[in-house]
Length: 378
Image (tube, rainbow, N blue to C red):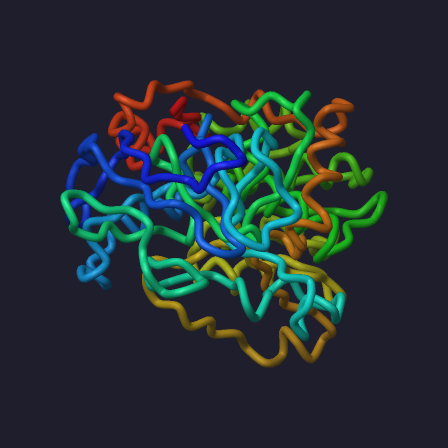
């Protein structure tokens, strides 16, 4: 490992490489090149598996982006820094983030958006800075995922896509704040601004949906309804604040009618956490005339949302959000602090701790719907 006074060298390490869509990951020896200007190289400690990793791994829409290293919900330690990096030092503990914050573009300075124009969602499998990769196997480039690629012992990210965190925070749990948990918390707090005494309905009780429930409970919502076709999730939902659960398979009438009856006319807030555009319409229909619907899920198919205009004429609002509206560098440290102060629960969202060598087990558990978050110890 290079010292701060030396120029960083190429590192050879182990990484889980996907050679094709849906193919089992293979642990390969990869070369990780040094960070360039405004980049840092990180020794990954833990990386939790997010649904979007699995979705993109299975997708055949971009076969040219293989071989590829997935993973983006990660915690780690800065191993080396590139030129012009002043924010980080070797040894800093960090969270990686799939959208960055440059703090200088129109969106960052507006205070109205977290969609950084310089460090937004990277879809080409390369680095933001030079559109090239930092991973190679015997000279062959290996593509990145979301400009993070945390299923590797070492990775390189833009310094704007990492957040310095307290060294007191356990890395095997705060990695969840890199994506899913933060998205759910932000949807309730920042996007919908759930109010005390309100009624809330959540479609999908996975990690994101449970995080919405947790946030609504903290805000003092009087009724939190969880909707899911898997009854095994209901006990976990109640632990996070869900007051009642609905299994659509057990209902003889449309879900919006069930919810309207339970809430005396409709919920104040509804959250679509499934990734199903049809559920967006159902969520809107489940709200009262003034209700706010927030959609968080990313659909695998049929990306178009169809909504009857009358639902909006009545005063309902439909909002979308990425990463819960949080600006990573500005907002994530406060979420880590709230976790350390035991104001936010993370432990109960981790259903499996998995060794790096067994990473394919995590993918199988996620595909089969048998886990919330698997934390992979790299």
